[in-house]
Image (cartoon, rainbow, N blue to C red; front, side, top):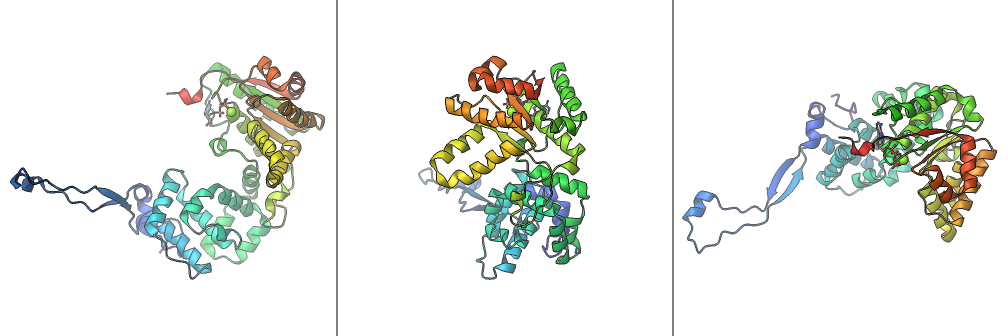
Length: 393
Ligand SMILES: Nc1ncnc2c1ncn2[C@@H]1O[C@H](COP(=O)(O)OP(=O)(O)OP(=O)(O)O)[C@@H](O)[C@H]1O
Ligand SMILES: [Mg+2]
């Protein structure tokens, strides 16, 4: 029987297809330990006799036909294939987490299924998902790895050799350009809130925002040569006006227009042991996060490696979005770190997009006039004013 997610062995049935949304949100409520005296009987009782009421405790119970339940069973079935002695969990509890993964975290069921199959197929990753709770916590990590792996032609070939029809489709249904874009985008470190930001979903609610959008589009239209000469964009404006959105949207458009020139860092592909795509790399880094990672790495030896890796990408990636510069607490150390980074990118002609809430004067006092002077030489200014998007009604 063909099920809603197209997986025969999962045993997902037709009810789950038809009631995809109803099933995920609807749970059966059963009452445990309810002792409530009916009102008709109550009137017959002597006034001195107290009615006893136990606390009503409700537990959400998922039908075996519901999608959360079936996806939980799929995970269990896959775990049992490589770990036959695995102790049977409380599937209803798993379904509860699965429901939250889909409803609250907004993960599409087809993608959840793909992540489960991916993680359980891989000998390294499957040891990391032995419960739905764990799957939910590390979902982004697994999904991003899955997309990268899926984009690797060598990995696809290896997987396809060991797969039957419907599972194999998971690896076949993307054109190579789309594969490449997905892999590169996944490696950029765009935070989930902005990962879908594009020119198309930017709504310029006032002439200033319209102007900002046009400036970004014109910059992108000028092509990759401008980027290769180290030109970038400097987004300035009040909180919530869409500066980071426009920076991400500009990066997306540049990648979409020139995807053949972009690639993924080879260190991201250690599991496969082979490079996925060669080409220019890009990343988005919060300046506050970068500085605090660096600060921690001075005191704790173990955190040196990730700090070095982030700093390496901040220094060498062909396009870097340095988000929220000027939000950090000023100090001589901060100024020194930022100068070192920005001056290197300036000298090496590496394109940088900055976003900030600070005015020019504030920025000079926050990070120093030498850095600001470099930024102005490297970037085209984009003023993003108007209303805070979060306050739109
Ligand atoms: N004009 C817009 N159209 C559509 N979405 C918008 C627009 N402006 C902002 N958003 C959305 O609002 C949220 C906040 O926007 P963003 O982070 O880009 O603001 P910001 O100017 O960088 O704010 P901050 O100064 O706090 O960093 C994001 O989810 C973004 O996608
Ligand atoms: Mg921002």
